[in-house]
Image (cartoon, rainbow, N blue to C red; front, side, top):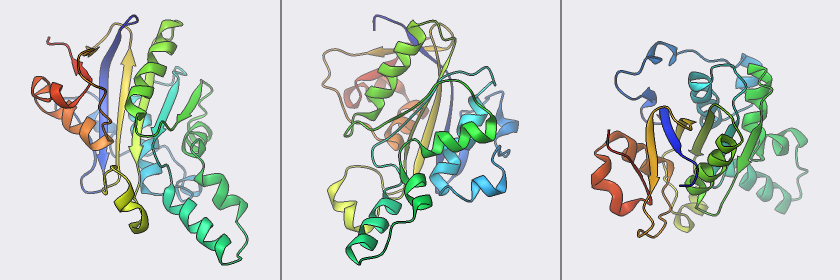
Amino acid sequence: MKYPVHIEDWVAWTADSGLSIRPGHALTERLNESILPRMLRRRLNATGRAVCDAASVLDDGAGSPLIHASRHGDVSSSLEMLQGLESGDPVSPSSFSMSVHNAVLGVYSIARQHRGPTQALAACGNEFEALITEAAGYLATGQHAVIAIFSEGEIPLPLQSHTESPLCPCVVALRLTSETGQRLLAEPTVAAARPTPLQVIDWLSQDHTALVARHRWFLERL
């Protein structure tokens, strides 16, 4: 990469295991804290709440850019509204506003009073590639860190046979810097994979070298 990107910290969440962090992480004591007031927390589904909780663990309050990527976002709510329209029911403005891709970071910004840049991405399955590319751009402009969050919520039954996204809701959040942490490298000879959040969690948790064949990105040996 022309502009270096390093993974300084990361946090993961799945609906099966809850919020977890890489072993020995200094921020473990913050895992059970939620920055969302009850009235805001109830507006999000479980995945949205996990996105906010994961971001809060990595956010040092310095206004670092937040990037959230999800292929489908809150697709359950979107499908429910479409089915309602088909039945002739009106769409709730509140439901619609909370189903769009930037809703989760909007709630986070309100709860945390975050005034830095926020960005929501969907990239037809190439969300991880888009996340890293956008983060590199922010770091190249002089940002000291970027928090990149990759999530997927519950996939409704009618859509499960039409997507490669995991059936288990999941979130992985990365704190990226230009020089601190483990450097992220791209393998130009490997065709760009389309990793899901679960695959990224698996990649970060296991032997990185054994997974190069399945991922364009890999971590430099320390």
